Image 1: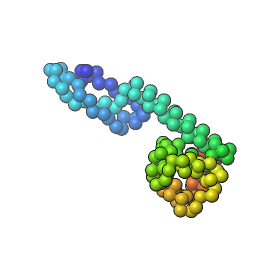
Image 2: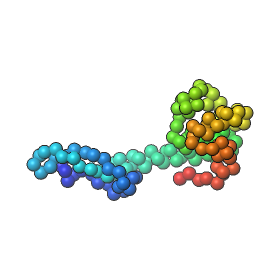
Image 3: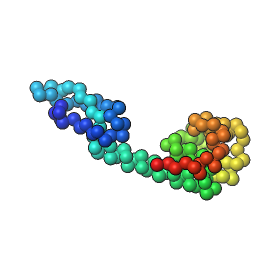
Image 4: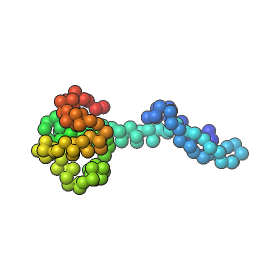
Length: 140
């Protein structure tokens, strides 16, 4: 790729604040370093990926509001985590985390376990327990 052909997509998600380093050939055919702020296919793919993440977070929020899931599911999705990852941070088994995603089991959690979940999700225990606050949030 020639130096002047390195893509520069002004509509990228990081708004031109971050650049990637590419190697391109200059007019003499020598390799040179060129910064690129993005290119359209990458931007489109990232937008689509974030749309999926936002949809999953919103679906989890709706389940919590409806009483079909605990806040553990919402914060897991919001932090772009999965069950094995949360289980690893919690020092427990994935099946235990899955059970804690059910309201019945979540409401029986000890203060210590709630604190570990809050620490894992980088929130307070109060935020973890405040499902009313989720009713006002609209993920976009």
